[in-house]
Image (cartoon, rainbow, N blue to C red; front, side, top):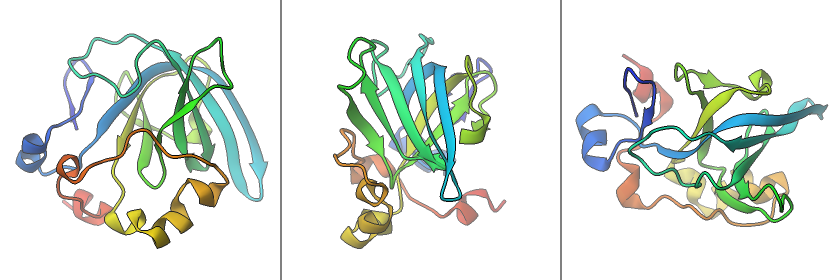
Length: 176
């Protein structure tokens, strides 16, 4: 992904991924933190963050249109993102989920936001990055997929091989 002076997230296409040698990412949503609930359960910080749409100028279409709110449950890390209409909060659809990485980035400077740092009014970009292929196997999904966390359902968005580019470990990505 690239950051331009205007601080708008720009997901890269396959050709750009190769050119810049970086991990593929997709913009899921741009929004403002509406509500955060947290608790400590079994040694984990658990909770849910709800986002309301924030219309940000972008040349890229997010996976979730600005007519929806977004719900992101977490257990230390973000587990999945589901969209819902504010009038029907119980009617939600999972868009992206573990084992793929779900990250919240501050709209103003692009810094990553941990679940412990969430607060009302924070403006964020929600992005997803593909998991390593080991996590996509049946064994990997049993240990790191939605069912492992007690969530039923399948995400609407799934990476296909053409979108993922070359996947590398964190050590390869940032060892410069």
